[in-house]
Amino acid sequence: MTLNNRRRLAACATLIAALAAGVVPATSASAAPAVPGATKATAPAPDMEGVVAALNAAMAEGAPGAMARFTGPDGVQARTVGVRDRESGAAMDVRARFRIGSVSKTFSSVVLLQLVQEKKLELDAPVNRYLPGLLPDDRITVRHLLRHRSGLADYTDAMFEHTVPGFEAVRNRVFSYQELVDLSLSEPRTTEPGVAYKYSNTNFVVVGMLIEKITGKPVAKEYQRRIISPLGLRNTSYVHPDVRIAGLHVRGYLHPDEAGAPLVDSTEQTVSWAQSAGAIISSPADLNTFVTALMRGRLLSSKMLGEMTTVTPTDTTNTRFYGLGLRRYDLSCGTQVYGHTGTVQGFYTYAFATADGRRSLSAMANTSNKGSANTALGGTLEAAFCGKKPTAKASSPAQLRSTALPAESDLPENR
Image 1 (cartoon, rainbow, N blue to C red):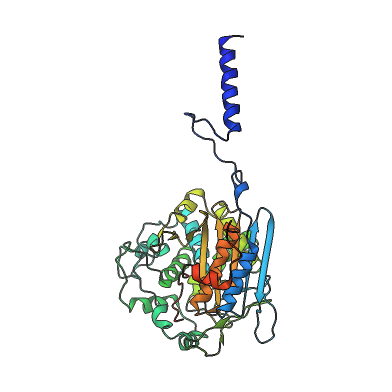
Image 2 (cartoon, helix red, strand yellow):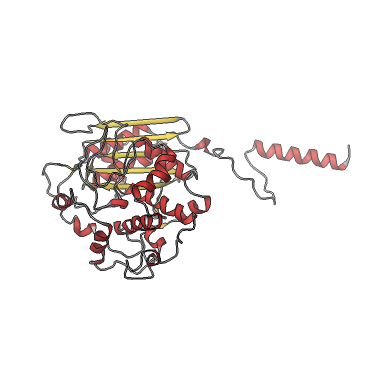
């Protein structure tokens, strides 16, 4: 046997021994790209009992009903509790449509970023380049809008200072984009452009204006052409200013500010006060499809998705972040999920997926102005993506309420 052959045999023996011990020898060569899904064998199975506990916790905090739908390598799992209609007593139905509130912002962001890809506008250009004279500060850029760093005041703070009277005042009203921007500009700005994160619905009203100015078409047509039709989202629509939710749907119930006051059925409304910031209607299955497609690169180039998922913190916990119309939550098990939360009168929504798009969760509770219910619903994320805690027993609704971080607010709430 030659010296070279003996060396090869010795190297092979060393490699085999290292692999048997679970150790991979270091090399100077760069690692090969991971095969999609190759490292996902260790992803925990969803804790559907924990998901149901979170849904029940939302009901214990005042939601008439709640539901969640999880998709993963092993298929779809859905759970429902309570009712979708208090008057008829109809059970919650995972096939039903509902208002998704600020999850609409991710739809709007995708459309705008596609326009950036098409070189029809630039992320770091002043908004006033495309909408001359709209904003009082030429330093406010397109990127500032998408990251909530424009400093534009959120007009909904004053609009919904008193929850039910504020809602009833706008329930059937039809606003122009300009009217909403004017409401914002009548208030002091919250920060200098680019300095700090401050969530404001005004930002995505201006995003809607940009989409319509650049394309020459209503946002409804751009949602349909660029997202809804390509993904086959049969239960997703933008029907502003129609007040109805067509077909099988969930009824939404708004908590008044006064404790003990009866819930207000808030299902029918124009949502004109939100428009491109929050007026889309969808279903759990469609939301799963949307966030999955987004994270798998079906809607944006890898470069643009990288821009969208470049995030900065939104609070001091270092677990919550915001990119371009996209939230990132870092869960207790180390899993990072991307998506958005949604609040519109009568509905709380979560729609998130893992970075590779292999797992996704959509969850909804049919109430609002009850932050504790929103916080409880957020517990579905931990249960779905982190699975059962190794040493913990099944969580009770009380335990979930005591350990969860307060839900982030997409809309002013007083309870």
